[in-house]
Amino acid sequence: MRWNLKPQPNPINVEYLANALGVDAVVASLLVQRGITTFDEARQFFRPSLDDLHNPYLMKDMDRAVDRIESAIANGENILVFGDYDVDGTTAVSLMSSYLKSFYPNVDTYIPDRYNEGYGVSFAGIDYADDNGCTLIIALDCGIKSIDKVDYAKSKSIDFIICDHHRPGDTLPNAIAVLDPKREDCNYPYDELCGCGVGFKLIQALAANKGQTINDLIPYLDLVATAIAADIVPITGENRVLAKFGLDVINSNPRPGIKALVQNVKKQILSISDVVFIIAPRINAAGRIKHGNYAVQLLTEFNLNEAEGFAAQIEGLNADRKDLDKQITQEALLQIEQNSDHDKFTTVVFQEDWHKGVIGIVASRLIETYYRPTLVFTRSGDKLAASARSVKDFDVYNALEACAEYLEQFGGHMYAAGLTLKEEQYPLFRQKFEEVVANTIHPDLLIPEISIDAEILLEDITPKFFRILKQFEPFGPGNMTPVFMSKDLTDSGYGKAIGKDEEHLKLFIKQNGSEGFGAVGFGLASKKELACNGSTFDAAYSIDENVWNGQTSLQLRLRDIRDAEN
Image 1 (cartoon, helix red, strand yellow):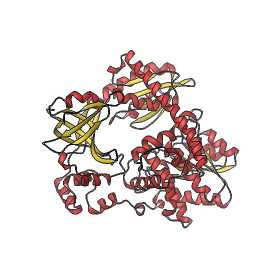
Image 2 (spheres, rainbow, N blue to C red):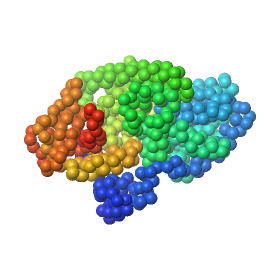
Image 3 (cartoon, rainbow, N blue to C red):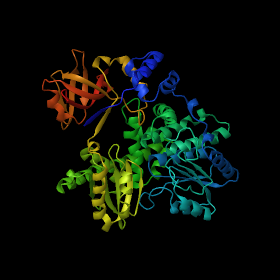
Image 4 (cartoon, one colour):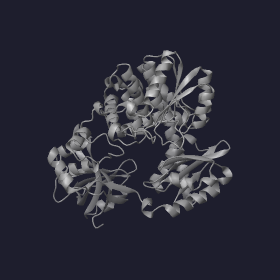
């Protein structure tokens, strides 16, 4: 692991904020690192308010979108709510359709089939709208590049409203309204909303015209928080407000579908991390294994007994997803070892019967082992399809663009992408991809990095300090869980490997005669000898709580340890 201590902020700014807030220098430094330098900014950070949400009409085309929906309702038109099959898309469809249906019945939903239609707006979806007499399609989390699809719909006298958050191309679709804060001509104050977030701004505008307030929309925020967590968008600005209040709904009064998903979870309070690792994979499993409609059925069902039935179905799909994920990962790792591919700058594997719905997850798993830009291929009809994942700070999309001569199509962003190619192009593409990455990646990027916020002493870790850190939540991109470093540590002498396969490390750490803390390092059992040989060592860690036999204590969540001489 590469330890990277973040640049420490200007001491003058830290001292000013520490005095203004009455906090210690470490807390003030963490805030300044996050761009918070004044008392008012800190108040807004620690006490998010729904009043901080921006006026939805600041978004380009919002007035046109609202006018068209109100016209459709006044004229009794059929409206189709269309969205992608992932968490952001299915939550957005559930949000928009359930809001509209609360006062207007002629609303239908459509999620494209992952395998027959692929990502985004589809001709099949437009034909479905036409066959069912829908004259307005509201597309969520997709559509910003669907120029030909929107033109096709227009030829059938079907209008489009697009709510997207992906970066537009040079030309916008010929839709009635294109809501996307990343439009160059859109001056909306916050451009990091997810697709469901853009959908929420639209219902916020519709609600305002109906005389409703933001408080009337709080029940929908469990969906928005789930999408924010799953889509890994920055939890800053408006997203932080939506995530905070959405988490409150998830923990106090979630919709029956989400309640059914988490009813067997033992934790009393769910965090953003729990949404990412418990709720999101189950919603995603529907589209990965069977069909995204299962997720929409679950999230729009208001009878708890019915919702529990849908949740049980999705639980089964998620179990299938986990089995496939484990099996394919094992097969891919074996393939890499047998072909001696672990010495390359890239990881590229292919087996024609691998399930297309989980190859993206497998690519992420392979990065955990080999930490290389990774592609996992499977057969898709008469072509090969792949999911790409990348390591921190390397743009895999640009690398694919450099290999475009061999590709049928590709799309995505810096860290995740998808592509298809003809089978005969696979060997040439694989060779070119390896060459491109080898010639452009800095060797340091092939070593996982731990980004450390500050070096502190163990004596700095007090219950008060931890209570303030808890108020930094919800954590996520742009506001990650603080990671600290402490030097010259020793174990009490009782350190040991734990877990079924003894792959984890449990220590009791002291520094300069301090009282000490329990510490656990998941997957760090290989560092046992380093920590338990009587020598001093350094540790990188975050701080959390350990509950045991009804007693709660602070513990260190180890990220890595190294010899103190380094």
